[in-house]
Image (cartoon, rainbow, N blue to C red; front, top):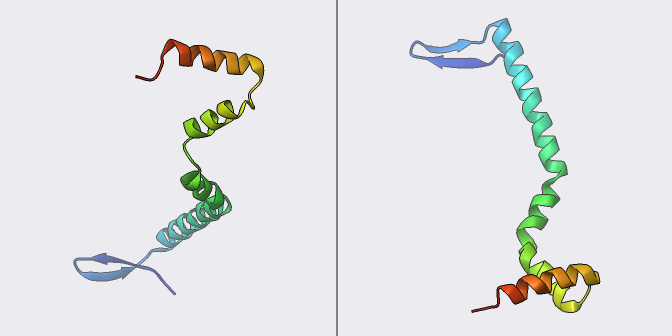
Length: 83
C-alpha cells in the first residue's frame, strides 16, 4: 500500500526514494520503541521510589553506613543543624 503526502493539489503518492526513507524512519522508530519498552520498568520504579535524600537519611538513622561515612555525614549535620 503506497504512502501519500498531502499537498494543496491533493494527496500525491510517495516516490520510490520517499518510500525508502519512510521505511527507514519507521524501522528506526520501531527500534527506539523496543528499547524504551525494555527499560520501562526503570522509569516506573523511579517514579515510585522515595527521594534519594530520604533513602539515604533512613540508612543513616538505621546505622547501616560504614563508620567513616556516618562520621562524615554527622559532621555535616553538626555543622549545619536544623533551624
